[in-house]
Length: 337
Image (tube, rainbow, N blue to C red; front, side, top):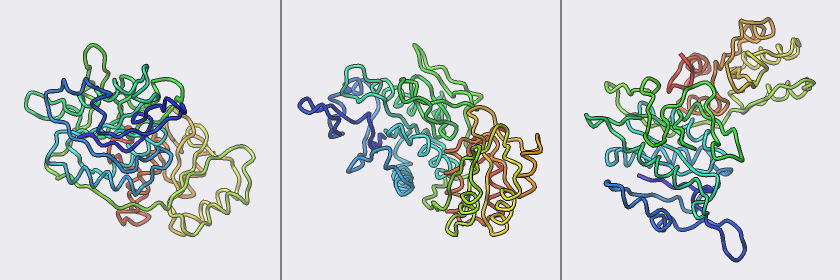
């Protein structure tokens, strides 16, 4: 099943104005006639109106979960066409909302519209459909998890981030090896692919709470800014983007603000600003002070995974202490174990 949410892949250029405009998704086979060569049935669902990637929000994640849940028994896999700017957020959110999924959900898009001669959209779309439909000799899907496919690389969805706005290889997965790579053949890294627990049912979750924010530390950050952020009443989770292996300035006012926030029931998660590696708060004194103040390690989660995981956990009604514990556990492969 193809689900078109919006994004560059579904646009054509107006020959008169030169502006990019969305086209009717029913015309997809006209622009990608190669789809007619697949020997399986492909159905499509189109968001109306299409959503620009910058306008993606949690209500639409819940809508995607409902679409997949409603059609779960009728299709072998799902391909979601999505704008690139927030694709990593959507992929991360879906990995937590589609608990114990046993079928492929592959997000893809393009850097150039599918109506442009040099578009990367055709290859991304065709490969994603093939990956979503791929099965082993027993009829089991080869990639039963939420993924992002882009520029010949199949990546775990909650380990991706958009790293390039210029090249066709727009996404990177710095702390998790790719699941597959397409070339003349499709080469799967079977040891990296998560296997569902077939003793447990597929459990979709539609609830979320967007009561979280991310705060990036930088040299010279103001005390009053820190104190204001940590005292916000409607915020339940704060992701603190720290230096290196999870370090922060040795300022008592920072520690005091964190302690007060933690005591009030807020969950503070430490995520590094570095692209590679993760948080080890016990490594240096500057990180150990955060640990003693009640900060939870984000390990090597991406910022996208940390934000969406907090939203989903709070939405499922967990207490602050339960959320702290679950943030330290890999629920969908978002943390290296």
